Length: 250
Image (cartoon, rainbow, N blue to C red; front, top):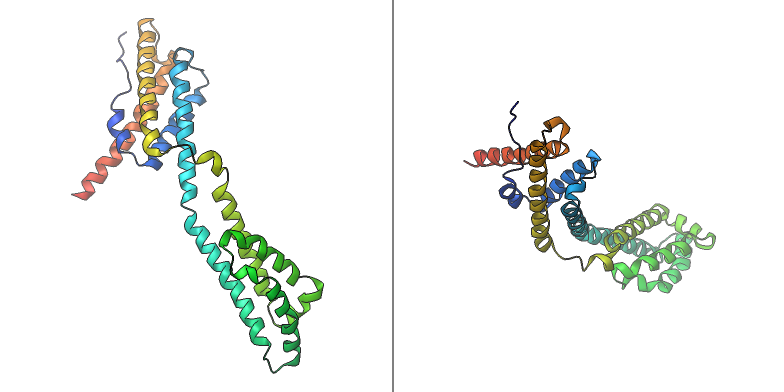
């Protein structure tokens, strides 16, 4: 009984229009689906491995670029920490002239610690993290923490510690594996390579599906049937999105 031939078609126009996020999602879903079939695809192993290796590189570049967007969060975290740090300093300096003897005494003890750790206020954001940590540790020590409580700065000190840890966490993630990632290249350079590898893969898949048909295999018996259906369905999904978008623009 004659059955209609299938093949992957119309990919490139759609893929060229994908934003970088969508481009990465597209290949992540395609490669994930193919792997899930568990067939190994021995007939197209070479082009399949090339596609996977290149997409792995694209994914790494995309993740690196995502980390770059955290620079705004990094700056904000540094500013919040600086403001809290400066507020504590101002309260202590003001308390030196307080009418309350206990406050003046407490401030007198703490001013020396501020002077000792004065480099905190001149340091860059990245340099400040360990300096702030050392200052907090000393201010929270039994010798000085009573004075902190007297001036009502215990909550502010906890907040400073929280902001310092927040900055360190973002900073660590931002620069994680930076040396390995900085030479990866750009999305502009990797996308055409991934697309070319995908084109070779689809040509091979279409050819193997056709070979299966010549051997008399029904679609349900042909492992390439499901790959073709999935990719075509995914491409059609993006086509519908673009069609609706263009309609709404008119």
